Image (cartoon, rainbow, N blue to C red):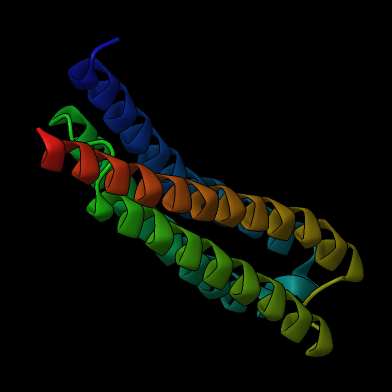
Length: 159
């Protein structure tokens, strides 16, 4: 697979993730929340705080998609190992860590405010684990791309 084909595939994946996120955040979650409120009217006061909280967690996710698109564009131009890509991966790591901390802290605060259930807090630990895994992978890739960019610059200096 050449660089341009890889770039197109990566951009398609980024677009697909963006569309899936829109469907999840603006269709599936509100419909599920509405059905919970219909079944359990005592949850009506919890709907909007949760919706706003979940929408706020989407912001770093879409920032990550922006950086992913940027990396895919660089790959398409045959500039895979550049410091720009390393910085983008570092920002992905920072966004993943920030979103994970925000998501966990929000769940704890909602639990203390009696807007959350302990089982939801326990389930959110899985989501936080996934966020930490994404951050570790992005940080590791950033380190490796930085090293590779140094080697590429070194080799170009000799030619």
